[in-house]
Image 1 (cartoon, rainbow, N blue to C red):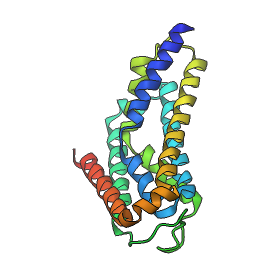
Image 2 (cartoon, rainbow, N blue to C red; image 1 turned 135 degrees about the vertical axis):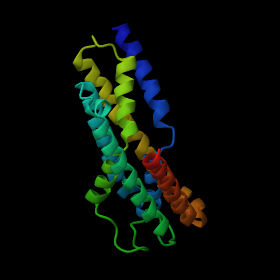
Image 3 (cartoon, rainbow, N blue to C red; image 1 turned 30 degrees about the horizontal axis):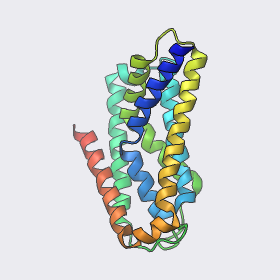
Image 4 (cartoon, helix red, strand yellow; image 1 turned 45 degrees about the horizontal axis):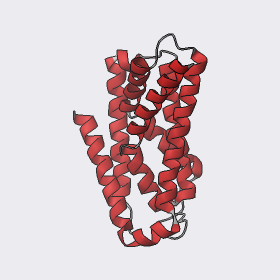
Length: 208
């Protein structure tokens, strides 16, 4: 049992360190929270967690097609890069607006449906090949091949919950009334900055 606790602790720490490093998902959450409000950004967070769960499931079942097939990997990379460029462009084109306690997008046309926000988060995370490589590598390096599938499943559930809770914490913090009052003067630049970073990440991913 102590072996599995040590294994879980190592896995959880490595996963959390990667989680708190800002990436495309982080800037998507920030940009969406500024535009849609924190309650609606939950859709994006759930979508991101679901995509991470999918890759964790693939890693658990030994489904390494993205790792072993260069054509499939390159296809996912190109689609992901183009999607990040699209999201970044949408944020750059967003018009200036004022935040409320929990904005719903009324200042810039109708709010996006919750299921559309969920798809946005899912596609952003699932088309990021770094997620696939990260989870495959994480399980390959840290988790012993003899660790029972049931225990590995517990590891996977923990990581999905960690992703969801961390993303919700980001959205909740950025979307809080106090933070919104402070950020009101910078809202437009936050959106533009998030969009610019997504475009840079997408461009690097596409042309590297």
